[in-house]
Length: 323
Image (cartoon, rainbow, N blue to C red; front, side):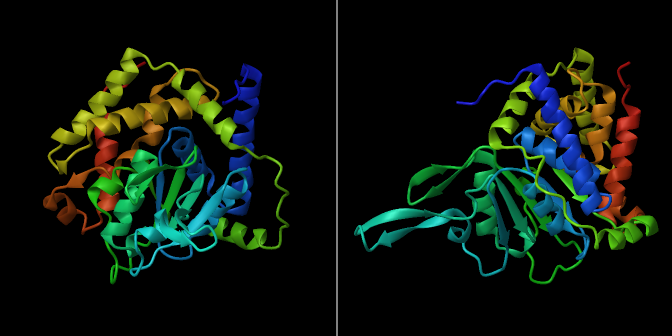
């Protein structure tokens, strides 16, 4: 049974999350916005995709995030020869007890790092998809529930396409955010080198499973006015009518958008959603949900990510914001 938290304890939890964001930001320079998106994904029962060239600390960021959580963490390095059972687990014969039993795979964790998810075949991606969406896996005709909370942090490298298996649209849609990591600025890169000699801080700001579940309850109570709901719906509907977009965002995206905005409001010490919450989330939440028309990609030289962001920005700016 999940314990109840007072208003003061919720404020303390929120402050702890802020300290964790700052702490990881000192270790992985420039990562504070990403850590905020990770917390929003975790609290809203969603998942996150990190995309970038090798060497941008995607794996390190996920590891640092999990190190600050008092939860079970596992990592899977995806390869082309993997089988679904390598993720979910399998039925094995116990020689001592002389019976079949289920041996859990690495997906049975609170935080799962799915490293280079696009290097594994569709069957394995499908097994991961079931866990992400249904919070359970099916093995040998039996369903096995995953632990709560459950967060998948997936990474992929966009420049090496040989021997990879592009993520299906259905799987992409299960990620609340897709965050594209870019090269750091000159100042940030200098900060990275300076941080190498700095001792790691002790694990003192820990958040456990019960605290995340308590924050989930608090997030559901955050108020969203009729104007805010209309704002979200109008933005999503504009993605379906834009001349440069072939397929826009779905109604499921609207629901995820609202929940993510509530969590962001909660982490910003508010019990109500404001338009800034909606705008803050728009790029990372929508950039992987729009299928662009070929002419949109031709204009940008094939850079789909930058084009999506420009289109999203225009759409958000075109919708009248609540006051």
